[in-house]
Length: 288
Image (cartoon, rainbow, N blue to C red; front, side, top):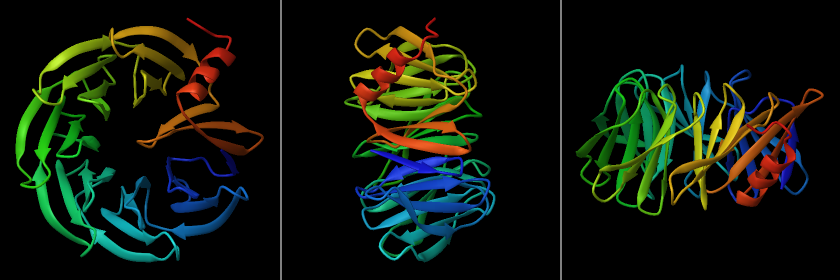
């Protein structure tokens, strides 16, 4: 699946039929029909839409500099609600009944009931929460400024564990019974046992790992260096490091990974899986 657009994507989401893309420069969210490759709706949100999330009916957008979240009806493209959250919301996840929002500037996570659009809990976490994911029972939050991961009971809203990780954790994801955390300034990935909350491995990466996606392997995108890295999930070892070039970006959306390439003032977005990432590695000549 491949779509094309003029604006540089910030975050990418696929709802099963449409691709939703947020853009910081225009403060818009674009809805692209994958059947026609056309933008079928442009929804004006507020300042710096930093993340998008889908609850099976609505698309949720957090606006970094407006301190709120927009709830968009995915069928009508109308903003159904605007919910005030903490300062500088940056990332979100959905647990089945609630949207959880990382508030970078207020060191909190907001829990929003998707049925009532009300903030039903505000959980204090570490400094500068920037990544969040849900494992079916717990919400995991990585905190850039305090070098920690918080594990929160999604029902009681209680913090049940605080795990020390590397310097400036930038993203977090789950795979099977492990939590993986990119540590941007210590240049490694922390692997946490989700049951015991213990760090079971620290995996060295090239400089400034920022985004992570886990399939059969662990895939790390180092945006500063434009490197794509493959880590063996079983042996916890770096097996390949490739420069994909300044015109390529990687956007994990939880289920898929999106590969963005810019050329002639257009951005191409292609939905991928492990095979597509392998092809991207093979196709690049600059291999370390």
